[in-house]
Amino acid sequence: MKILKSEAVNVAERVRLNQHKVVSHRIYDYIIIGAGSAGCVLASRLTEDPTVKVLLLEAGGKDTAKEIHIPVAFSKLFKGPNDWAYYTEPEGRLGNRRLYWPRGKVLGGSSSLNAMIYICGHRTDYDQWCDLGNPGWGYSDVLPYFKKAENNQNGASEYHGASGPLHVSNPRSLNPLSEVFVEAAEEAGFKRNPDFNGATQEGLGVYQVTQWQGRRNSAAAAFLRPAMLRPNLTVRTNVQAFKILFEGKPAALVSFQDGNVSKQERAEREIIVCGGAIGSPQLLMLSGIGPAEHLRTLDIPVHCDLPGVGANLQDHPALPVAYECAQPISLARAETITNLIRYMAFKTGPLTSNVGEAGGFVRTSTSCPTPDVQYHFAPGYFIEHGFQQIKEDAYSFGPTLIRPNSRGRIALRSSNPLDLPLIHPNYFDDPRDMQAVIEGLRIARAIGETNAFAKYRKCELCPGPGIKNDEKSLSGYIEKNAQTLYHPVGTCKMGPADDELAVVDSELRLHGVECLRVVDASIMPIIPGGNTNAPTIMIAEKAADLIKSGPRKAQQEPVLSQALA
Ligand SMILES: Cc1cc2nc3c(=O)[nH]c(=O)nc-3n(C[C@H](O)[C@H](O)[C@H](O)COP(=O)(O)OP(=O)(O)OC[C@H]3O[C@@H](n4cnc5c(N)ncnc54)[C@H](O)[C@@H]3O)c2cc1C
Image 1 (tube, protein in one colour):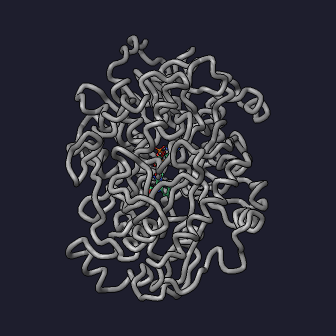
Image 2 (spheres, protein in one colour):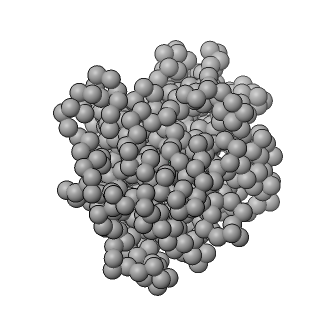
Image 3 (cartoon, helix red, strand yellow):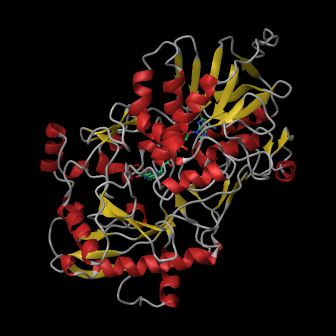
């Protein structure tokens, strides 16, 4: 049912005041909030036990848009009905620009509109998580969960699984420019890497993608759809959770709008928040869990003072480098009737492209112990999230900073759950971040100038001949052109109780609140050096085992207050 914004605001206010609620008679063991990468995995794994009843609530709708499933079309989803379309607050070091942050608002969450690149991250990422006081999260602990989720086209190995639900495939119709990029990188002195998720991450090559037979394999397609056939899983779409309610210490009820009434559902065992790095801290704060001072300024009663909620925000900023292409072979020519027929009939051709077909990982200085910059090569003009269009053929690639030292935060704009939260990424707050990206830009240009590209390179479009390679020119370019590479994490940090910014413990249970967990990209204490979808899926796989092996909640007293209209 469509809800008018004015109606929704009234319902939101009633939820806030806990008025006019309808308490359901249904009994669920777990309520999962958010059907994104993590929520879909959890819903699937928890309902493997037919005695366990799960309710999955998703603020967005069903994943029916064709642009979700045709890989090359993903950027056409931006700013549409399946996108939260967040904007950051003005970024001080980026000329006070407000940066656009797409996030999935649909079954599958951001895995339904991401670029499908399958990267697990560097082994030291997880060893670092473990060293920060999170036992069970070292590389050797988490590798089995990556493998459990994975169904790799190249088969099982020490590093890969081949019998999980998530299809990981080689590109079906690699653009010739992507192969040229890898040859150019070799010419510039970088190693070719045939498997970024194998023994070493470093080097350049072609990405594997989360696709199955030429279609996107989102977390919804891989995990949720098969599980939806089970009678013990209820999935509700277009339902945004507004608040978690408590009975004493434990979290017990979830409040949401349904049409023009406010409803509540009860979880007998646990409520699991999977709203992503923006949605999860927002919901916790709306429920009175977060920095007490901030909540009080918004008249939100404090249930648990947890200063880390919304803090520790980390993301991967990226810079564009693009060339006009002298040959008519780029993705600018992808959208033809012939290619559409080829796609419909055989699921091959340029419409299967994930745009960021090739790339890899480099160290910008010999003092870096691990790669600090990643490249994403697109055989087309992919600038400003694909919104900038040109008629000419082009190819683009640029440095993405994958080990940022800067930290930002998410805060509430108001106590109204329909108000999008305030996002302060704080990009380049730490000067080391600027230095790494400057080096990354120089390396990109060196690759762009190789002989391998000679017969394709017409001219450099970005940064363009007006921007020299000196530090001042490149930092000016960064200030005007840095964008997100879509990987916000860390806002409900996992850590021990004596870490003042920790929100969840190593079993992803809230510090100081019972029967409540957070399971998604927000729990990452440090952002992994690579794309974040596979790591989020791994987190949910591991969380499912932790939840299954945990003690059962004591039997609740029968609910007294039913159906208060
Ligand atoms: C454009 C784009 C490109 C990307 N490309 C890649 C890539 O190529 N490879 C890669 O590895 N990663 C990529 N990523 C990142 C990756 O997709 C995310 O890190 C991952 O999906 C995060 O998963 P999550 O479960 O934490 O959050 P999400 O998948 O975002 O899920 C959160 C879900 O919760 C719902 N929700 C939030 N609040 C509420 C509420 N109050 N009530 C009910 N529902 C709620 C949301 O609607 C959403 O469906 C990309 C992301 C984007 C946006």
